[in-house]
Image 1 (tube, helix red, strand yellow):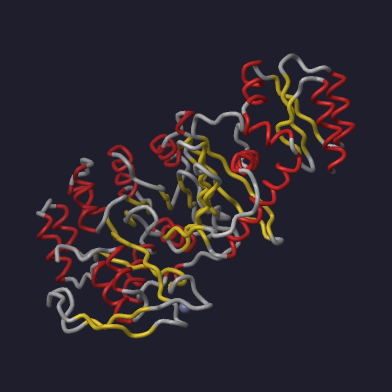
Image 2: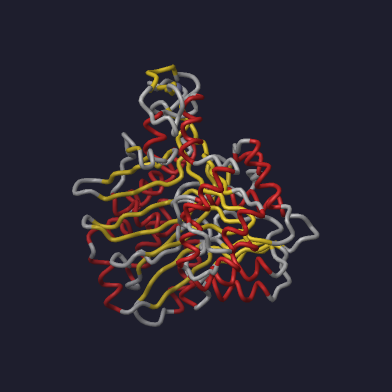
Length: 462
Ligand SMILES: [Zn+2]
């Protein structure tokens, strides 16, 4: 391989061509003028793989050749190889440590790599020996990005076989002061089962969700900030509805988990394919169940609510903090109560908190000073110092849910545009458990720490 690589480099140099990509099946080179047919033949012979020749403007090629970091990655096979190894090693660690994202950040000196595990970033202490620019170039080649473009953000996807397991990644780059930063998101692998029972939902709430999903039409909304697990809840709902006698379809940005049997469409805003356009097209496709990745504007909200009233079950997410705030948000989006009330089947608000390690957690101080309406009596708290089983005391995550229970009374209140305080007190009458209550419960059971609960949920007005 080394030898054929240097032969190829020499061949490229002779024809003023630049090697862009070279792996087991493909060799990509760039040239300035129309490629010499002899070059193509020679490259095919020397590389024994498919050859693609791109014709670049001279300035772009010059820039690539004279950028100090790029030539390092393109001309020195050693550096390229160490970058390939470094990327593999880092991604393998990310999988082993259950990371959701990997941040590659060039610093004034060297590269910083951080893994997001259970929602919190952790710095990798020992980095494989590779040049930051070479690592970035390797990632961009994997993601099918333009490696010469370093001034604009780019995004792409790739799959890699690591430890005999195929994993999908999403890549995005952004220029920062010391070069280019890349974030790699680990996507759920297709075969891991996604079911409602895996949500860790308390039984009473699971029953509410299942009964809403069993309705022939209506609107189910899951809300929360980014990273609160709402997409996973929606996917679990979709999986439950994924039966041969139903046409289940989705419009997403992007398709995060491919689900067999569901017609998933990814929006392409640059080609004019936005949420509304896909949604309108979906409605002409004889759907039973429609998942709208996110309701972002009044138009999407209005189409979703109308679809939910005309014989379709519509599932979607909203970027709001609580079930009550969701109603306010929809009002701001000009959805009148008389349309929303009859359509709404369920509103779920959720958060993810880190779970205390069961191997090293121990009872800690009890808290006695919480307001009575928040938590009657003293609240037992737990702590975990960290052990061989966990990562700094936490292992895995736990979802907290708040559900706005629907009843005739509730639907009437929403239809009549009653003030929000009225809706909230009605919800309390119907026994709604707030996120805070769910969080304090989790603290008292030792599932999470008080500090973690406070970080994620807050203590409300208290
Ligand atoms: Zn532990």
